[in-house]
Length: 419
Image 1 (cartoon, one colour):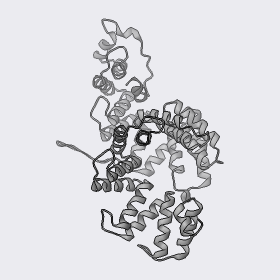
Image 2 (cartoon, helix red, strand yellow):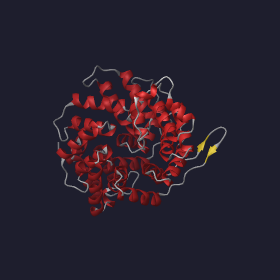
Image 3 (spheres, one colour):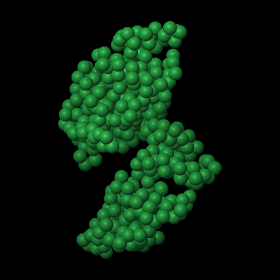
Image 4 (cartoon, helix red, strand yellow):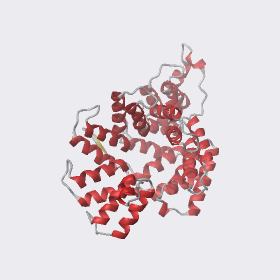
């Protein structure tokens, strides 16, 4: 929890000393007397468990007192607590209001959090006794706020503004804008922003705005992982697992997946589940794998949902339940998991557990193909060649079949007579 609040109370500029634990507790007396700085500091101590017992609820109480006394930094930290449900009931909507007020008082990081919430908006919070209204998405306004903050050299604003550009589909990216995004990420990374290091690593991996360079990618991931960034840890694991920028080393991959899973990264939990399911560098433990898949699925990990669907489909580690399996496959496919999209395509093509629907089969094969699933490319090619669920197009179908064979799909090679 001390580490957690270290992220929460980012605006705290006061020095926390051991002398405040004196029997008379002068800090508490000053806080009770209405001293704003003492209230802020006392709240921080309770939230972090420094000089007094850890008590998040009491910490939020004193931060609110400091906010009411006029501390914009305290208000910002109340917002962080509300957004994360730390010491108080979780409420992003109420957090947004705290950020808005703190931003108006000049707290740059509060303006950043406000902008991030405005990018996608917030859903209404419906409770038994009340409904907190939604926060309307205002992406253009949010972008302008991020641009202002980035111009003021706020690292996280530079990172997120750059992310908006490099996360666009390849056919929608502008080379000049990508190069500018990379420059912002480099500035943010130089300011030790771990997320910027990770995104910059993505650029060097995919050649977005820079020449691909797996060595630079790997070094950036190591730096970000050293700061405890969960996604960077998982991507390091991917590198070791697949030999990207470093020789393959499954034991190292397992270590980094474990560290990322400990930080509750859903994808890492699901991948760690694979290690226990197959007994890769660990003693095989199917029940532990199932637990990891379920935890990842509860956090809406598409891969975790897919793996759980496979278990229910096969009855491994759980009672076989085709209906539940189909539900997991559907959710995973909707989330973009190519394996689940391919599986749905097969189910609709074969009429297994669902009413046969060639159109739906072709749709899911195409979706999976677009995400790099080679088997789906072969199946979509066959749909085109046979006019199954789509208009017949022999030329495109044959071309896709050839591409699938070139990518190593054995069935495609057989169909083309290459084997």
